[in-house]
Image (cartoon, rainbow, N blue to C red; front, side):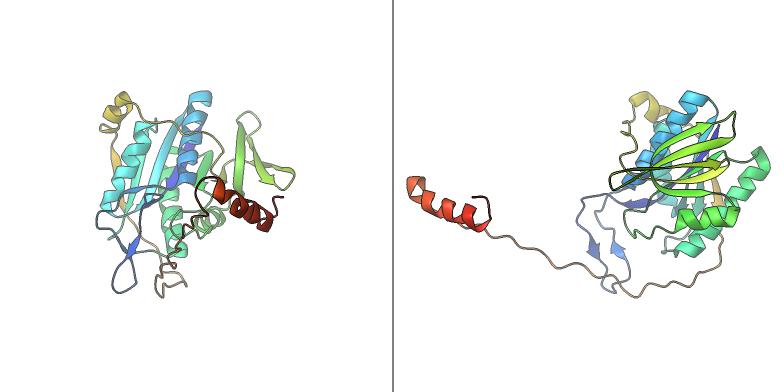
Length: 256
């Protein structure tokens, strides 16, 4: 089983995000970075597939050289190979990103054969465009199922079964491999790296390619921070004197 997992370096979830003065980028001063939560589940699924079925897993990211940190993290979890599509750090539109990834996938497959499965996160934690995985699948001419919460490859049949959650149940898809899947958070519980894994990740070689792709039709106008939501605390009273005010509040909220 050959699995490729594509991840993206994004600001750590929950961090306070500031915008540069020109409103064109995120101010990364004192900002931590991680891979998107959906992609953490994709990496975990890739590792589990290889542990269960044999083979090898590869992690790939497009971004600045500092994105090697996310590749090393994936390697510490059990991924055997890492690929960096190097850019100068400026934002890439999804069309350009997908073209660059598809091109490098074709290069890697020309060397060692096709990947049985290519995994993406359902969407990235920063831009949330839902586009790159679908565009890569289309460029490679492979079936794609997004927003999945279950994958079961059948190597003997050459197919994979994907489960997508919907209101009141699940949709079940069976697609031929090689295939592309968009993983949704909750598919599994990502493991934490062990000390042994962190040490082993330092020995994993990272193949570096210069990212190349024609610019797409989307452009960034500006970034806008959402308005700060302020909350106020109202003291209803103290001791038994507060009881009538609490009853009135419950009644107002429809709890009585």
